[in-house]
Amino acid sequence: MANVKKRELTNFVAEKAGVDARTAGAIIDAIGDVILERVVAGDKVTLPGIASFERRTRAARTGRNPATGESIQIPEKTVAKVTALKGFKDAALGS
Image (cartoon, rainbow, N blue to C red):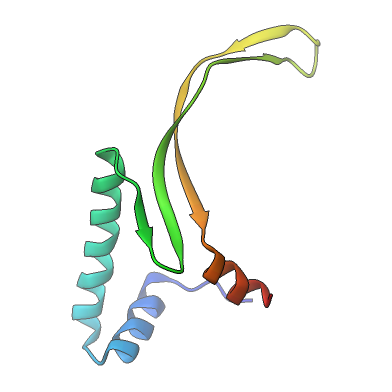
């Protein structure tokens, strides 16, 4: 199983879109920048059939220290949530 690096992804996109690698690289960078900017602004971004990206706030809660069993307070936290969509899961998992 290979790990696709940015240069390889750029080449795949360039070939698929019929553009040069420099243009494909600029498009990939722009898509990443836009997704990040919109999620930071509080929007949910969906790439149809692939994934959705959003910012979520995880509520404060009580947890346990596994070593001592002592109760601890876990503070509220903002997290990034990425969800693979059905079309992607079906294709990737062969369902």
